[in-house]
Length: 138
Image 1 (cartoon, rainbow, N blue to C red):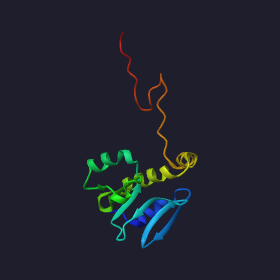
Image 2: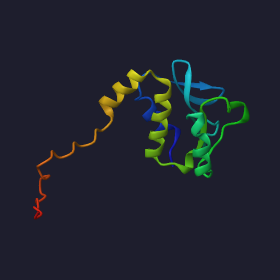
Image 3: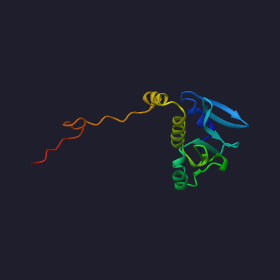
Image 4: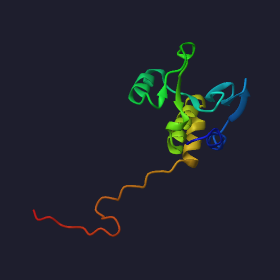
């Protein structure tokens, strides 16, 4: 199960992130904008998410994701049960929420420095190392 500490370790590596404690709830910010927040008991994580995609996310896996309270529906926000996600999924959710609140150039600089790049495609005319090229008649 993913914990608040797991989220903290990752979130604090993201540029411009600060952590706060508001009325007993851990929150992660960029400036004054909250992009991740936890329930008092730490079992539910709220995160920034596009409004127009909320119904799709929650409807597809209602055992994992939940809509925010009625008063928070005006925000770009979704909730997830911490026990229902693995660390890789948590990182993806937190990173996407962070991207929503930082300037694009900050996100691009982070991705250029820390995100793995796909390996280049083999050049035309050369078979990848260890693969034998077969010529077809015709």
